Image (tube, rainbow, N blue to C red; front, side, top):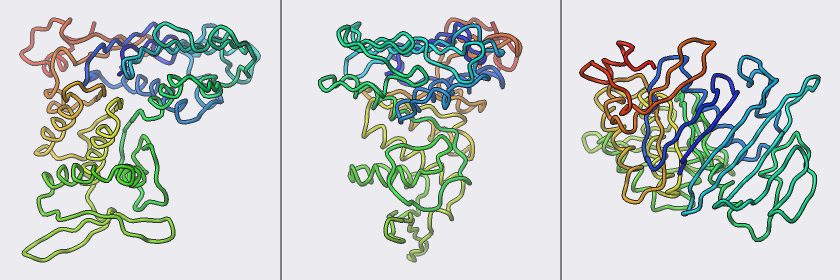
Length: 367
């Protein structure tokens, strides 16, 4: 569970701190340009590290520094609770004058206040006893191997499994070439991901089917069809007037593809109850009639009893906003393109309008 995120000198985020404490579902409310997507981008940097990116230039470039200010380092701090352990990961990135690429200034990981590793530039210490050098253009989190340190593997796995979505159904692949343990931000490899989840835990099938059946009542079954040595297609069987007919994934509407993506996210969370999921504009491609039930289904899943997973959404749709409450709506504001992003939980903001949507439209939430 994400407890705290701190960012400094990264794009529009200066001295920025997001504290989620024990919230299982969160909504980010803000105007275009306020910094919501940048928050997603920061978490995607951690996700990419978890998925194997170690070269710093693949994560950070000159445009990453606030207003091009390379005289100050970029600071990232991430505090997470996993299996009742508290993880604190810090990464400081600098771009010295005359250098072509950024480099690591400082990096550390603490578990329950105990240092797993710390580094200053390239000089690294593990558990305060072993010392060695690392290339300061590479992230150390994935390069350090400790035979008896399961916490390190646990944290890297949590980062890898972060789900970040800004899906575009027309870019979804029509069939699967191989299984994938992760899903891309646009959702292009959704069939690969669903294929892996169902092969690793077949019992998840019924949850996906029930989710789809509620929204597509004529659905009878869905299944994978072998197309080649490794290639598989996804076939959906519908029933009309006692007659069955099959369609493949490419023939589904954009909204129906989003339903399948949504169902897969929910079973991914069931498969890994510590999952962090960020979804930008979940209302895109979903009809107004289905939208409330669609968003409610996600909130119920992630707010199940003793859940340690989290759902973070952002949207401009009134129906999505109204699915959240004052205690878990965070207002993201930015007064100008030269000003930093600020964030405040809605329950700490007073406004005169009858609803939060009206207050947002009337600029009463800007602080």
